[in-house]
Amino acid sequence: MPDGGTIFVSTRTVELDAYYCRSSAFRINPGIYIELEIKDTGCGIPREVLPRIFEPFFTTKPVGKGTGLGLAAVFGIIQQHGGAINVYSEVGIGTSIHILLPATAQDSQPLSSEISMPMRGSGTILVVDDEEVMRINTKSMLKDLGYEVIIAEDGLMAVEIFKEKANDIALVILDMVMPKMNGRECFAAMKTIKPDLRVIISSGFVRDEDLEPMKTTGVCAFIQKPFRSTALGKIVYEALHS
Image (cartoon, rainbow, N blue to C red; front, side, top):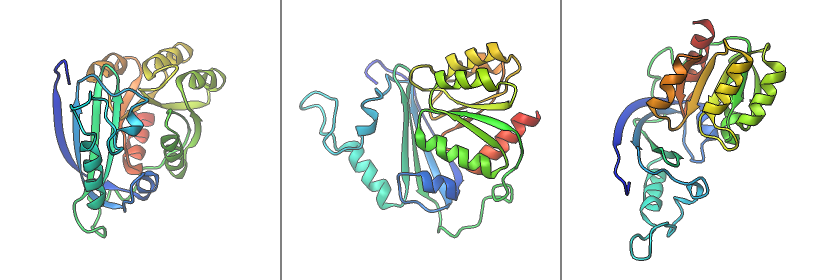
C-alpha cells in the first residue's frame, strides 16, 4: 500500500461442501477448514494483472525491487497442505485474500445439523456475476434448493433482463465488481423499474460505506465470496421471507 491504508485479519471455521470443492481451481475435498482472510484498503490490483499474480517471476515492481516469487511460494505451500486461496480486488478500493486450510481429517463431522440440511424454497432468482464459475456454481446450488434461476454476466445484461421479467423475479443476487456496469449502478437501475426489489449483494470485497446507503433501499443481505450452498440457502430463504 504505497499511500498507506488499513489491514484487517480475521479467521473462522467453515465447512466446504461438494459444490464449492468442484468449482475450486484447487484439489480440495469437502470437510472442515480454517479460513484466514487478509483484507486491505490499499490501491487494489488491476483486472488485467489479477490472473497472473501467482505466476513465478511475475512482478509489477521495478527491476531490483521484487523477484515475483513471493505469491508463487504462497500458492505452492497452500497446495501442499491441501488448501485453497482466492483473491478479490477492486482498483482504488482494496484487496481481499481468502486462504483455506484443512482443520481436521476430511471425514470430520459437520459443524452443526444446520450445515448439513440446506434451507429450500421456491421462486425465480436473477444471478448477476461476471465470473462464469460463480454463475454456474450459484445456479446449480439454487436449482438444487428448489429455485428457478436466470443468469446475467454483467450489469447491463441484468438490467435488460429485469426490464422484461421484473414481475417474475423475486430476488436478485448481485455482484458488486463487474465491467460495463458495476453492482451499485445496476442496483440503482433495477430499483427504478421495481422499487420494492429484494437484493442480496455477493462480493469477495466490499466496503461498509458502499453497503450502508444500499441497505435502506432494498438490499436484504450481503454474502461474501466464496460461499457454500448451506450459507446461500439460508440467506436466500431469509431474504424472501423477511
